[in-house]
Length: 231
Image (cartoon, rainbow, N blue to C red; front, side):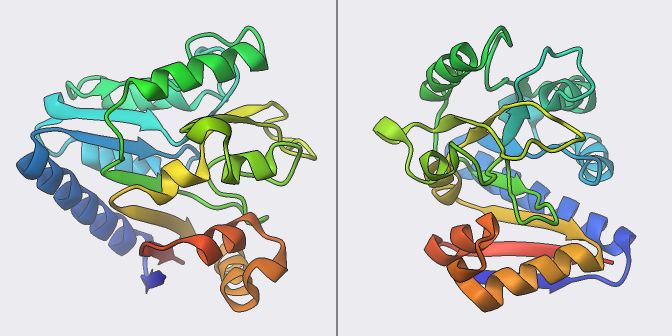
C-alpha cells in the first residue's frame, strides 16, 4: 500500500516530515524504551535531519544507522555515515555504521552482517529516498539486485554493485536488504521534483512490469509506505 502526501512548498514538507518522524521516535521510546531508525543519504534529507537534531526526543535512547552506504572510508565525501555523525553526533544518539573498514567489498559485506546481527531489529523507522531511475536505499539493478530482495540466511544487510555504476558515486555499496526494510514498523519515502514524482507514477501504474526497483518493492510490500512529495 502507498500513501502519497503532496506539499506545495519545501518548507511545508520539511516541517511535516520532521513532526511525523519525531512522533514515531517518541512513540517507540514510550513503547519500548529505545528506538532504532535508519536514515538515507543524499543532499535533500539533511535540512530535515538538522531540524530533527535540534528536537529533544531523548536521543540518548535512539540508535541511528544508514539505510545504505558506499564502501568508502569515512573521510570520503561519498560516506553517508560521516554525514550522519556530523548531523547527529552532538545529540547523544548511538550512531552505528554498516561496516567498519572499506578495505574490500567482501570484507565490508561480512562486517555488515555481523553489525546488523547485534542491532535490535525490526527498525522503528526507515527513511528512504528514491532516484529518478527508481532505485531506493542502494537497491539498483545489477549483479546483486535479486540478492537484495532475497538475501541468503535472511541477512539484514547486503553488498550491492549497481550496473552501470552511477557516475557521481562509482563504487559498490552496502544496503539494508529489502526484507529488513519491509519489516520496519514505519516506512517513509521523501522525494521532491516532477521527475521523481513521474518515476513514482510509472512505478505505481505499471507495477513490477515497469522494471523499476521501487515498483518491485511496492508490489511486494505488505505494509503501508508513506511518501512525502515536495515541489
